[in-house]
Amino acid sequence: MKKQTSLYIILLFALFIGCKKDEYETINRSYGKGYLYSKIGSYNIYKVEEIIYDDFFNTIDTSRYQLKEVNESVFTDNLNRNSIRIERYKLNNKGKWEILNVWYASEDNLSAERVEDNKRITKLSFPFTDDAVWNVNTNNSDNPINVYYGFINQTYNMDTFQFDSAISVKNDAISTNVRQRQYYEVYVKNIGLVFKNNINIDRNANLLRGYKIKQQLIKHVP
Image (cartoon, rainbow, N blue to C red; front, side):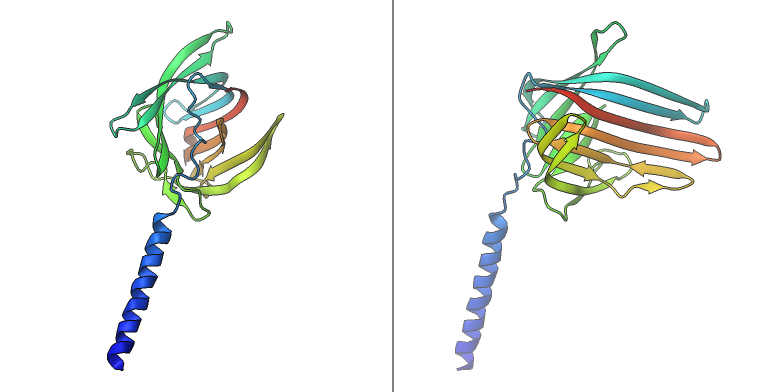
């Protein structure tokens, strides 16, 4: 009788483990794709405010400009993923778009990344969950920035725009006498980034070093 009971318990345990494994394996790891828009030829135009704090010269340099990001072409990266070449243009004082630089975007079933100024940044983590936490700088040498989703698949209004499906990525902001840290970005499905407000400033006495950058969508061409 004891032998039969033990066999019954083992079978129940094996069934439980099998169910948990199937449940894990059927998780849709790709849930969230499409927030880094990848249609070739599409582009976004942003208004940007950038403030640079230089503690060596004790200066504060503020610039405001328009930025255009164009999905120019597809290529295969070194991890054999389809990636997007993003050509970035800055509007000059003569109303002409001048090439600024080239960035890249890639995504798989685990994350969406952008290579910005030769730094690989993990923008999104898949699937979208309320408890997801990741370091955006895990693939570069910058200091860690741990972020999470502030909201997932919610409506988002910004000036004249009304978006049906948006997500936000944020950190726990820090504001003290010696440093300010903020990471906040909003993405919309089939459009991409629509708003960014990132701050990284260190203070030494009255000297400041770092930056503030605010970027907001003003036009999307699909």
